[in-house]
Amino acid sequence: MKKIFFALICNLILFSSCQKSISDFDPSTTQGTGSGTTPTAPTNGSGNFVATVDGKQLTFNVTAATLVRSQAANEKRIDVTGTSSDGTKRIILTLGEETSVGNSITVKKYILNAYPEDDPSTPTIDESLDIQGYTTYGIASGSNWMYGVYDEKGSCTVTSCDAAATLISATFATTLTDLLDSTHIVSITAGKLTNIKYTVVN
Image (tube, rainbow, N blue to C red; front, side, top):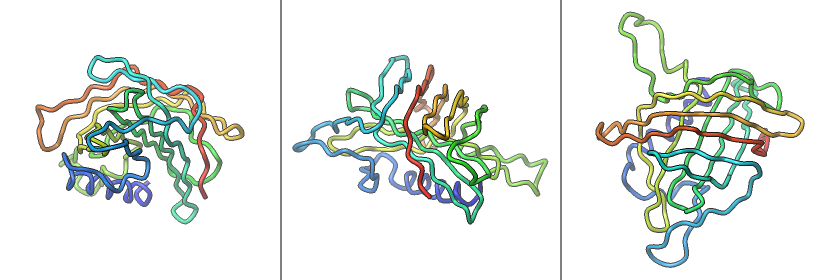
């Protein structure tokens, strides 16, 4: 995972350097019309994506879903991006595994945590190599998106992933604690992906 996730961690570091600022580099951003408008939330994927964010149940439109393979690194990851139907929140769920074989990911439970805690009793072990997935969370700011960088404690259980039909279903829940402001906590519960259609890249 270290090579694919290294690129993903670099994105998180970039997000942290721009935390609470406008993201102009997010390719899935949908621009609003006019100054100060909220981004719209188009649907270009199929299936259902729901989650409860800080106690409010939301429906998300799938704006991107891709499975990216790296044969050179013998790894792959799947990213599912959803934008809430009211256009105010965005969740990107990323899962990965150490094989580039196949057009699906393994049906199992994945631990969500981009920044695993370092265990001082195992100085020769790099805990970051155990990253199985993480959640990127954004909120609308005018016609752009703001992303925070969070310590995460959560999990995602892939209940089905059909390589032939390229459909994934999963459940997830996580708690995000802002790394710059520990009083800012985002609770995501009852997350559910049902028959999300994804595209295979590479």
